[in-house]
Image (spheres, rainbow, N blue to C red):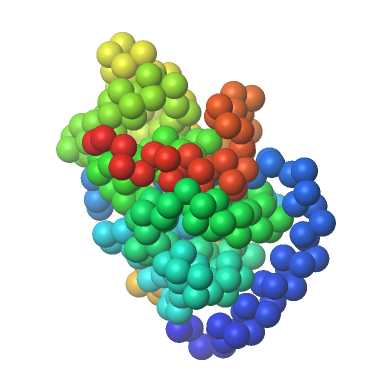
Length: 303
């Protein structure tokens, strides 16, 4: 844990204070937006994009909870230089409260470590699921955005987050294998939703913005022609040595090098996502409860 980081006890006390002071606005509020970050393959910088998007959203005034839901290769903690003591599994088992599990990151972002608790959520009976989701609804009072870092690929649990979220951000790079696998994710999502899903494409590690746009256009054309799916382009993050340096420092590059090209690109993408038309709501509406009920129902989706 980074030197000077508050103890878990201190963090929990501060989080309880935040929740209590904001609890009044929970009543009647269902505007929290859930955004799942997916990729077709590993190694495309998905988690790094998710972490730095969270920081960029927070810098623009949004309250963000970042859910680390990558069951196989969870590394948000490494990218942020923290060591969570508890995960969603402790909440599922009734061992800890939401405030105990949440971890304060820099820039005001709150991290909800998922771990095995994500799968355990699906294994609860209906009454236990409802009780847990009621507990999670406290997030409604402390966040405007629930940003979910998922696993890579087309595993059924990964796709469940994409189907459950209000918006999905799909990360690819210009590499042919990455483009192919990103299209594979789009195809599977389209099949499972009847092409009724909000997916935005982001190209990472491109040599230029024009290259990023060319990659996006290729995927957009194929998705439109063969999947009847319109895929907006959220933007490009260029190759930047500051990113690797920040990873080694275990600090989000948006905070370590706010003026580097990658940070400027992430800020633009966050602004694009925030400004995108979100009038089309999921059938059961927005908000924490709606997201987790959809997630619990969709876990086990055929891949």
